[in-house]
Amino acid sequence: MSKDTLTITDNRTGKTYEVPITNDTIKAMDLRQIKVNDDDFGMMSYDPAYSNTAHCTSRVAFIDGDKGILIYRGYPIEVLAEKSNYLEVAYLLLNGELPNKKQYDDWEHNITHHTYVHENIKRFIGGFRYDAHPMGMLLSTVAALSTFYPEAKDIFNEDVREIQIQRLISKMPTLAAFSYRHTMGLPYVYPDNGLSYAGNFLNMMFNIAQKEYKPNPAIEKAIDVLFILHADHEQNCSTAAMRNVGSSQPDPYSATAAAIAALYGPLHGGANEGVLQMLAEIGSKDKIPQYIDRAKKGEFRLMGFGHRIYKSHDPRAQIIKKIAHKVFEVTGENPLLEIALELEKIALEDEYFVKRKLYPNVDFYSGLIYQSMGLPVSMFTVLFAIARTSGWLAQWKEFLNDPESRIARPRQIYLGEMNKKFVPIGKRK
Image (cartoon, rainbow, N blue to C red; front, side):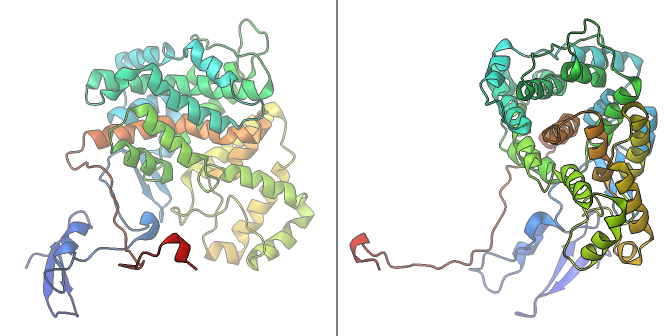
């Protein structure tokens, strides 16, 4: 008997099955052979929210939650945040290796020269109400791009596919900034191809009648690093949406719109907004102990602490904390920072939180940074979407090239009734 197998005994029948183990997993389809009789459908696994089910193999990103590790294509996130930039990281995620100088120059040029959007897209954004949520506008305009580039449906043509990838990464900041300007009642600012990826985004967001906008280097660097930290995070809700919708083989704009829709949900992309609301509710340092006590009693939830995946610490949190202080040197300290620092200090020393491994996560400081930059809360998730686009597309591209890929079709356990008698409407009680 091979060591790389799992032996299963079905106590209903007394039969024993030997199931192969590959990469510490068994294939769910191998369970189908387990039946009480020949008419049975076969055994299935039941896993709500896919908490312990791998739906793909991937080489894009890896998380070790127990050790607090996040890796992109083999590179620790700390190294990339310190030594790289977002466009280089995007290339890495999409192509598997960091670019050489010529590859990077070509990549940067291609991204830079796809930043403009069709004037009809600008008019499309103008059709939204003044108070429309920027994420709703981003979701709609990304989906609308599929109608502007009908050739994008040819997803197995590598040249066509690469152009759409470049278009999405380059146009996402433009669409995001236009959505912001629309909600603020400000004229749109067109891209400046002489600026960096992050610098151009800041230009389109905040430029007011400046012929040559020069972003503050500290703010520009902070945005770039935040984009790196949010570029990918393994098989989260929006990434799974990208892969699942992509499995029916639509164009990448439609699949990306589905991922944005998943990110739009408050349980996924809205956590940093929750941190700001929490800090504002606490209001002052002297009230922290009473809120800590309420949290222990289950009466109050500490936002920005703990993570479904990370059980020791979120490696992105410490990077963001360092960035935060550099940003505050430019913008002035956010009045909520003092409360955040004290709350973090108490929580890290309190046995209740240490025992439950409730450490600050990436959302704890990112909202403070965005708020200090002058961004409204409604734009926080939009910035998340800009960053995550490269990761979504890397996962989508990987899925298309996977020989095991098929259209997603989860199973269910039906618990409803069978063969009910139909009663005419006039006789129903």
